[in-house]
Amino acid sequence: MNHSVFKDLVPSYIENLTSEETNRQMQEHMEQCEDCRKYYIEMKEGFSDECFQEKKKENKNVDYLKKVRARNRKKILIITGTLLALFIMIFVGYYFLFVHMWAADEKNVQTTIQKKDNVVTVHFQSKKDNRYLLAMEEYGDQGYGETIIVYENWNIFADSSLNKFSELASSVQDGTDVTYTFLDENNLVLPNGKETKLTNQDKIQIVYKNSMEEIPLKTLYEQATD
Image 1 (cartoon, rainbow, N blue to C red):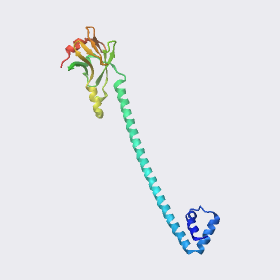
Image 2 (image 1 turned 45 degrees about the horizontal axis):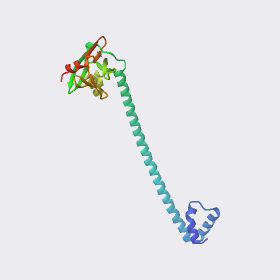
Image 3 (image 1 turned 30 degrees about the horizontal axis):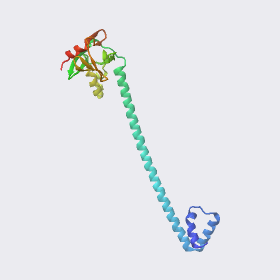
Image 4 (image 1 turned 90 degrees about the vertical axis):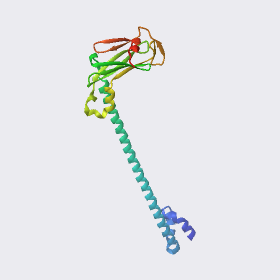
């Protein structure tokens, strides 16, 4: 085996890719040629160092990927926990605010009618700190809320221990509104944007637990205070 062939085969020989016969010839040549033997040793050391650096780089990449996955898992857990907590808060709030309500007693309700520009607001406020109100509209054929049913429920947010829900508590304690938009005392703008001319028969009914109040829409517009 000449020197050139030997040197060409060294990389494959180091990686154990040569045949047994070639290996035998390579070994015999190194026994006879000191220069080729030194060449083999240098190539093997360089190859080992290269393999070491490559392995080190691979391990570094693996460690980085592990850190990225760990951070991503932490973010996912935080997001999942936040969404779960939000869902629980919404569910609890919905349950206490809208489940098991009952028609309000008129004696416990303070009603005010106000007008800003041509928007008339009928405001219902509970006279009791431990109650909150909810006004539900029922729309008739005319296209506006003809019937307003006033419901009440226990105000759990009146408890000082629930101050963390201060924004929700404030909205509950501020009462509930129903609004009507007029062009003037004879014309009403419906929720769909259309206009309707009012007659003396156009009224709203406010329904409480044991009573009902009827107010003509024209009167509602006239009674409203600026």
